[in-house]
Length: 358
Image (cartoon, rainbow, N blue to C red; front, top):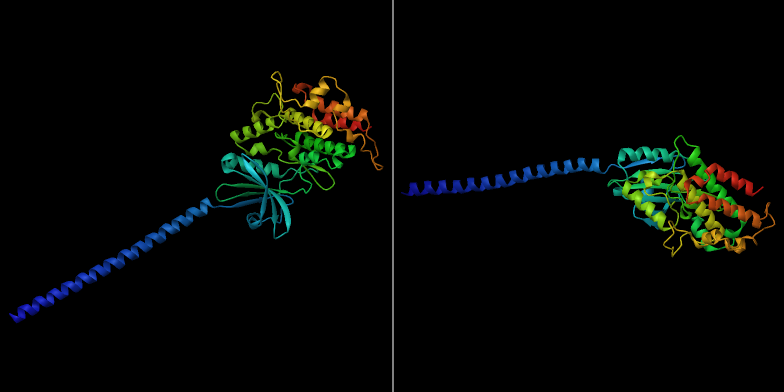
């Protein structure tokens, strides 16, 4: 009996030991398998991240020192916003240079293949009166950044409204007008395929220390999808720069840029914003009050800021006269004619500007 009890006890202890070993083995085996699975998932996720998080920086003339780190680490100040993006003034710390960074929302841009072609085209455009594209960054979530030089005198709209005295000098008004016209001429006539600006306005004219004008945002609508392009057009209309015949941004042509140019000329003369706050029902496009006065035959002195005639300086080679102002005003009015066929082309605009100063 004792032997039988001892045998049962040994068998029981062996069963318990085997069961314990089995439990421990299964636990560690499952843990090891789980670890391998997790590692494989992580590896797979990293591979996917490599695809999703692919970054790219295209560099153009003048942006040779740009790096992705420069762009991403640059402290920025928001200086402009729109439905399709945000404009930043950013300090690139490595080179200690200030740049304009334009962020475009991924949902507002065209397809990647088309976008690359458009960016390469825009990045190759260079002219003394056009803001150059220095670099184009594509981020991991599809975000896009356009890199441009920064111009410390800001935009023409602020310059006109500031009324600091320089904006009333005829020499400055004329120089800015001619510079904008020459920049537009390059876009319209000097490229293999003409570029329509599509959103020309005083806020998109930047000034350097010598009040040299630089047209920014040219062809920007070409990298935006149809919805974002139409929003741009509606914003242009709300501020008084849209040609009356333009319904869809995709139909933009040289004549609509000439219309916007004429409105800018009138801004320079009057110092006033182009939009008429209370248009009458019979107006088919926004007509600023000072333009309406001209149409109704009011005095020419009502059409420009009186300080302009008092702005002649000792170093001005050609003094301002009422006759020159009148000719400039007539050119502006012709440029923003409601009928596209009556507007001068950009070469005619430059020729008439040169005639004014003879």
